[in-house]
Image 1 (cartoon, rainbow, N blue to C red):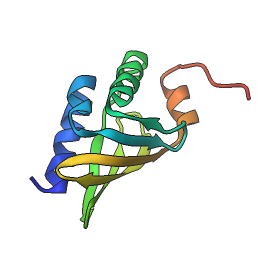
Image 2: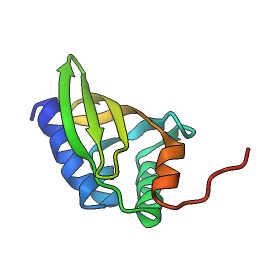
Image 3: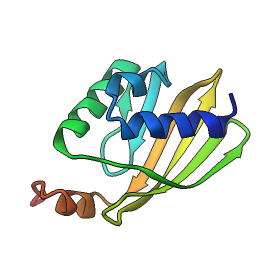
Image 4: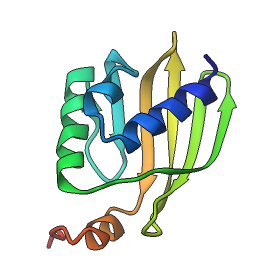
Length: 119
């Protein structure tokens, strides 16, 4: 499977709010770093992160572009509420080893009527 196909499947699984299914895309020692948050290390912790996030808000990822370059796939996305972001995925041996995501956390919290940190 190409990196682009893997990310397309990842997005479908994300849109199904399937935390266990998403975890299956990652190496056991993978790192997921959404830059608005601290990095998450390990497949089990990544699954827990997705489960927590899906419980907080209904999230939908609409693919704008997917690019491939060597071991990397790059996802440009938007959601139905107007939030935009991008993700960089290092894919080794058919699994995500490292992921970094960029998006506006304050806008996300406001759009979903979630508490905004005061610090």
